[in-house]
Each structure stands twice: as C-alpha cells, then as structure tokens.
Image (cartoon, rainbow, N blue to C red; front, side):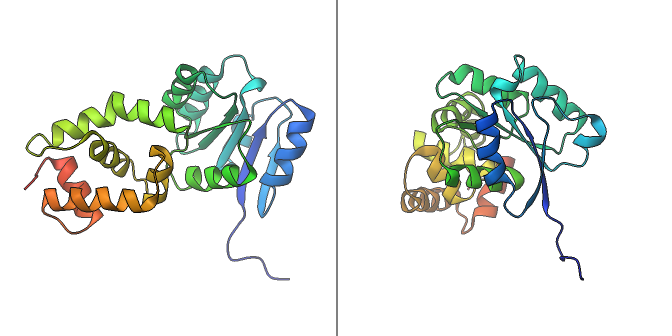
Length: 212
C-alpha cells in the first residue's frame, strides 16, 4: 500500500463543550489529521506537530495571553479562534496577540472551511468590522504615508492595505463587504495611479514609496 504524496494537514482542537466538539470534529477531520485536546492546551511536543490550532474562546479565561504564549512557542503556527460575535476590542486583542483568524459561533461550515484555508495560507480571517478597524489603525496609515505623492480615496487605501497583507481579491472583497468586481475596479485604479500593470509591482511601489 502506497502513501499519499502529501501528508494530511495536522490540526489541533481546544474546546470544552461536548456538542461543539462533536460538530467541529466532523468538519475539521475531513481529509485532515485532527487531535482534540479536551479543553487543555497542547504540550510543547504536541504543539510542534500541528500546523493549525483551533481554540474555542470559552476554553480559557485568558485568551490573548494564551495566544501570545502559543505563538511565542511556535511562531509559524496558525491559530484560529472561535468565539462570540461583537466584542470587537477583545477580538482585536486576540488578533494582536498573534491569532491569524477569528470566527463567531454563528459561522457556517463553509465559513469555517474557508477560514481554515485562509489561515493555513498565511493570511488573516476576521469579522469585516475588525479588519476594517485594524486597517484604519495601522496599515491604512502606513499606506497613506507611502502613497503621499498620490491621492487615494479611503476605499483605495483600504484595498491597498489588504493587498500589502497578502490578501487575494476574494478575501479583500470579504473584508470590505463588497463583490470581487468592485475590488478589481479599485485595483485597476490603484495600478493606473502608480503607473504599473500588475499587483506585485503595485505592492512593491507601495512598500518602497517609489510612486510614479
């Protein structure tokens, strides 16, 4: 019997609610190697086997600190948190501590699968309002400074900020609550303003500040 050319993605699950664990296990185990930790955090040797760790926010009282400690132990680990809707300050603290994604309990199975793919790909998944606030607080300001010689609308600066994060059009559309056609239109205008004809060159111009 031959082994598959690709090893399955190794995911860990930290949760305490029995029904939630059953539902998550059914979704997370599809084509993946899943380990449930029954409310406890994985030990160092267990942590280093994982590519993604899904944490139920109710499984710990000190979520931002836990996330920070996990990322310090394993910087490349993708961490996806499941928690309550609203409470955007808390979500921002969790993202700021190093989580790459945050999903609310009301998220659909499709949202969960998409979030897993996005986080494993090295990008970020969070409620649109949180992404918008993060961009406004950091990347938006940086993008405006880097593009000081070019007038950008607020929406163009948001699109540029997400581009600098490495998001494809689909994720940018999700973050901003628009369709991909609208994102492509904004991207086209940004390229024309920068005097380039592709996303890579646009990103380089923005990062280096070498605008046309």
